[in-house]
Amino acid sequence: MLVVSIRIGLLLLAASLCTNILGFVSLSQVLGVGTLFSGFIFALMYTLVRVLDLGLAIVVGSKWFQSMPDARSDVVDGGDGEF
Image 1 (tube, rainbow, N blue to C red):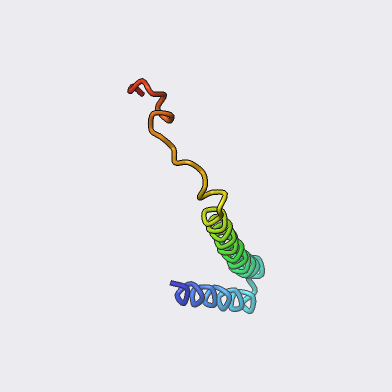
Image 2: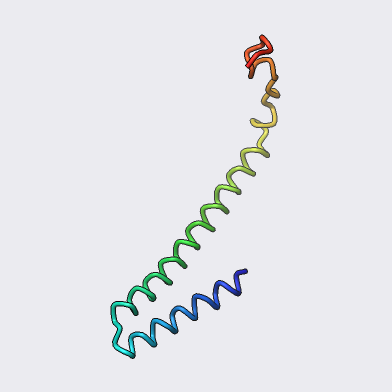
């Protein structure tokens, strides 16, 4: 999937270069900026997920979290048996 995405990005950048050579400067800018912006957004989202995953793993593995009592179902639904 990553290799295919990289190839599509390179294809879009090549198309941007070709449209710039042919004189379609606005289309070239849209293709180039859109491709680069989507790459940066992908890197941002990937980093965000990795950081949140690491933070969650640290919290779940901590002694504080493991010492918390398990939730009981009667506390959650009010104890009367009806929702």
